[in-house]
Image (tube, rainbow, N blue to C red; front, side):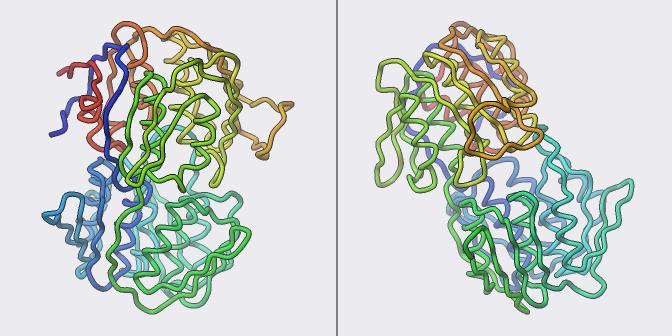
Length: 442
């Protein structure tokens, strides 16, 4: 049973040792649940994590008439969209405020009901994350977008038709939007500069199971031939590679040894390369990956975040904590979100030496193309971390603060844990299973 408190007191210094089980990816399971809206028959989704983002999407589906039930198998949901209906603004707003997923309901609801309403969007405050890509794509399909003080109302009086769409940036969310809209639009859609993350490929596999015709072409191009109807699917979610990488960083910074059950090498290869360069060790096994500190000093690295198959932005935050213990100067170039280094302020209060350059390091050699808003963090280590009082700012930053506290000398108080529960299943229970020394407050 997960301990439902928003604050914990952590006493650092204990290596994390043991096993954690990683289930379906937050970034896939929630989108797969939305995809069920497109089918005319029920869908079965397996390995659904017990996280708050899933609860939000489940609530949004239910207010639109989708029957969502849990089977006797843990993590298995049955989604029956037979009676999809228009939801009242107040019902949608009650669920949508804490997530950005609602924007992805637009295409499926336009197909099913001819209209969709999206209130103000929430989510982690790590950057602007404009929804213009989404709205421009929906307009290209023929949707009429009307913004008002309550949110965004969309209609499709003439239905939706295939479109030629070129994304200015390979946005995961915008790619998902196009896929979920194009599969039942009249004609063919060509999407260029698409995201090709593993979660995108898994969503394409789900849509193909439902009857969609989708071709992934070279050079980030996806072709979608619209079909008249889709059926339900049965699918097991891709494992959460972000959670797996987070526990790997936790093992390394605490001098621990964690077996991450369910993790797979193929989706983590870029992370594994950097993990090894820093000085971490891992063993690939059939049912997971063991991550551990092999002894000796950690080494500095230079990292550039990028879209897949580059180094994920979600990986850099827990890894920055590791780099505070590396012997030398590390540089992290953040090219995806402009405010992703906000979490480093708390690390500096704990004794880290991290200097954030808000406009990047333009003269530093690069492989990834610069973006106008990018930042860079220069991390000098090793530094001795000490306990502090910290309020979690966002999902990955919050996890990073927790593992910093676990490796620090003294006591830390971590609050606003609900943000961490957005993406980490049974987070507090897993800490206990790994031998962390903490108390739950409140």
